[in-house]
Image (tube, rainbow, N blue to C red):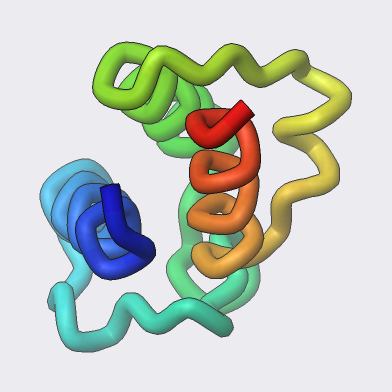
Length: 81
């Protein structure tokens, strides 16, 4: 899996879940401040990542992921381990 593949999955999920233009989702986009995602949106994103990539994320880990790029990094680190 590549960084681009993970980013595309996250971007597409966010575009669908929070009804935002996919082009507005960048790696530096902050979930809450830039994309107006709420806690339920973030929960469903975590579920999507766990289901798609087999990575497990605790609530504490999820609370430290603030940007799209950090989510991509997390998946790549965990999937490689």
